[in-house]
Length: 131
Image (cartoon, rainbow, N blue to C red; front, side, top):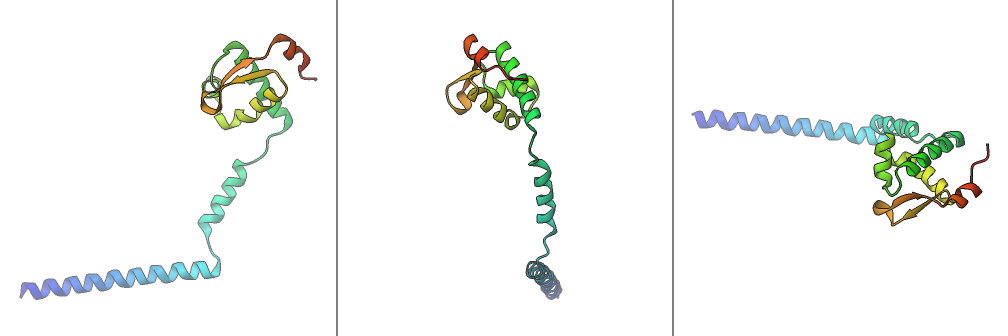
């Protein structure tokens, strides 16, 4: 007799589980068909806030800060310099690229193994930023 009661409880539990799963599946389908997706729109708003472009003045200020760090600590990686300057690595990639294009720094190596050095004095004087 206990076995019959147990079987009945298991059957009821399975039916409840299937009903709940069916309800959730129907709600998901309705949301997708109606185009309601609150989680995606919240993420999209956050991405817009994160991807705001910086002004030229902000990039130039970071470039000067980075150049001073490279001049003070030559031969270090960008990862070390970002930790020293308390900045995120992605935030200093653009200023580093600008400094390299201007000839104010030179980079030895590739990607993670790259070491940053100030350029020769003549190159720094020729590419000094105009104010």
